[in-house]
Image (tube, rainbow over all chains, first blue to last red; front, side, top):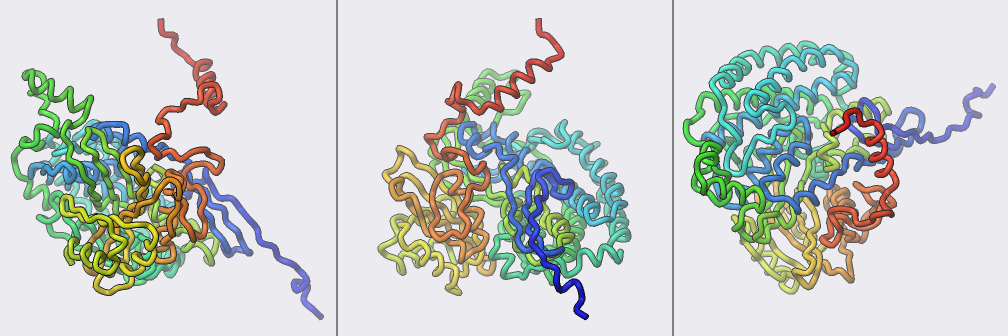
Length: 398
Length: 178
């Protein structure tokens, strides 16, 4: 007798995932074509958060674009600010003072920790490990409180300035952060005991979303998403900016390039970031926090604006018209933000506003690799794949 | 290799293509004609001493009223092995607003080219899936062009949703400002 199933016909099913879906980490829409539980075709649709930041930046002064950079990758705004400042400084040919460089390194690494913790929390929650979510928000809260202490905001920080930082860090901040760096390694172990050997976690992450080293480079992946495939590429090592050439840290690498390796990379990066912060705090030099030798480009200090006529005029001109003598030329400056390589490309025509500002957002490139990772995999792994490339749609859509 | 050396080498191999080599803040840009752009890119990707395996970025720039040929497509290439970088700028005119796609050399170029098409209206020949990416499919115009207004000048023809938003906001206002 013939089995009954042989008579049954199967048909491909198209389903729509998002734009409002808890596992897409924002407003990402995927149209999935399914054959049973296997994904045959995956088409991402983005742009729901497009605000035209590049167009806006062309019509604003260099200084007033800083708040826009907060809203790129809204969970790591400090890194975006720092990246912007580093890029504009390169364009203007000025250098921030040592202390400012160290402070920027500290806040950028704090951002990396907070971003990676949030990634771990949501990624684990998506895959089914809820407990780590609650643990990791405890440390994130500490970091956000420190951000509030240094600049008054927890998310939209706008802290870095062209040629330095907005304000100096206090002793209270340093003490609290140092305490954090002492405690944090134990906390990372806590997360790891929760999921590192967890059988469900291993089954959901090992050999899922594998991408080889050559392919990962070819797709333009960066950050931990690339390093999980074993490619040693880190902007902090390759083209050091701020104080990264004065501190010691390792670049953790994966071997296989699957979801688990990328998870391990990010966990190791937490330790390395902690190490960098600790070294920076120990080496923190004294001195000014804004470049004093570039008055044409940097704002005068606040106490001078209130007492000195010339400084006030100077500030007024810088805010309303922008730097009057920007050089003509173009630069591309990349910085390593938590998600990967954030590149700023400026074309300057000598006026106070950039003629063209281009943002090379890591999330945009990472989202483009989703079809490659998802096609041929199971529908349940789509969630793991979205989590592992670590995208934020604010940055993706700009 | 030093960036200037790379630029000289490109000029040596593609003498008729290179228009200009310029250095600024240690970064070198090579301006080329667009006709043999794919051949040039394949050369930079395949030759071992160049080894540009990583396309950092691809974007457009609009020079309306500043140059004869309106657009430029800018490629930022990087070699992870040799740790060197070069910027290639291909000139695209407004009349023939298209250029060869490089998606079969770097897969990562796919979305960058779609974005460039979306925001500048430059067509990439040979792109497997050239659609708008950030804006809706039925959007008119290309916002990053310099003649595209920053603020809408449609007046009465404005998207009707915006009126609804303003009216609802007026209706739901709690506090009256006296």
